[in-house]
Structures are given as structure tokens and as C-alpha cells.
Image 1 (tube, rainbow, N blue to C red):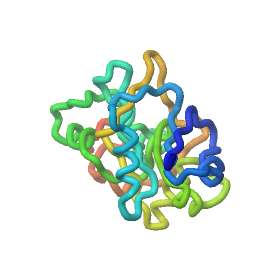
Image 2: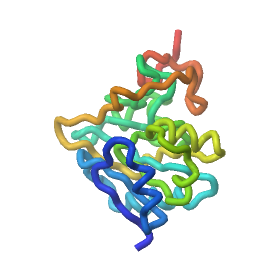
Image 3: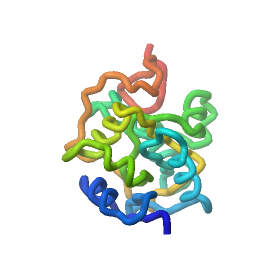
Image 4: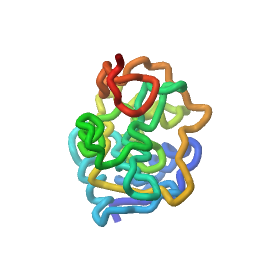
Length: 193
């Protein structure tokens, strides 16, 4: 097989697993997630086959499958500088900006580590001994792009949440893939007044 699926990634062992895999394409899935689209793996791997792609992540919906749990990680947002974008917002939000961001395949600085796909080749090029968020940012610095793909959907199981690790913080002031006019206090993509 040309792909390997890893259930329940914990801590920062992603890189070790990726480097030591016999497969080129690797998909990490937290055990709190349930796949919601039939061709989810094909969609993630198709993006990885494009030039200069580092990591690809699906949209993560809450247990109702109606609201977004994560549409990529906003860097420079919230108290810690890392926040799940659009968390709690309806996936079919009529608000133009939120609807556009939720439903568009797009570049992101950091993806949610609860589910992502990458290649063995790409992960070998990241720096040693860093956390997942640093790996994403390192890939950007090396000319790779990280992609949010809303056409691949997963759902959080009822009454659980995926939290960014309490030890994870980011001191970058502005995410280069998000509008600088957004309010950085939350993930709702509201214009700063």
C-alpha cells in the first residue's frame, strides 16, 4: 500500500513515525474523530501530490456535523497566539467571510494536529525536536504550503473536544494567510473596529 493511517497521534512523535514509515503518504487521525466523507483519503493525498505541499488537513466538524470545530489554526489569534479558526461557527454560515473561509481549500500556516496528512519525504526535511506547530511553520519557511481542505470532512465524537496543547504558544503577531484586519481576540473572523 502507498499510504499509512496512524490512529490517535499523541505528543510530538509524528516525525519519528513519518520518517520510519515504509509508506510515502501518511495520515494521522486522532481517535476522537470519525470520517464523514467517502473519499476523504483520496482528497488529502491528491493535495499532497501538488508541488510544494507540506501538510494537508480536513475540516473538523463538531458532533452535530453542522458547526466547525477547526478550519485550520489561526496564528497570532487568541490569548496563546494559536486558535482553531471558525470554532463554533456554522459550516454553512451565511456570513460572506466565514462562509468563504470554511468552504474554500486554502493555504494555512498551521493545521490542526488532530488529523492531517503528509509525506515521508516532506517530514524528513523538518527541524529536529520541535512541536507540531513549529513543524508547520518550519515547512512554510522552507517554501512548502500547508493546506486546509474542506472537501475532506471529519466529525468529533459527541461531547469531546480537541484542544490545542496547553504548552503550545506562538508569538507570531500576524498569520500571513489571514486578513490583518480580523479581530485577533477570537476565531470568528470579525473585522477589527
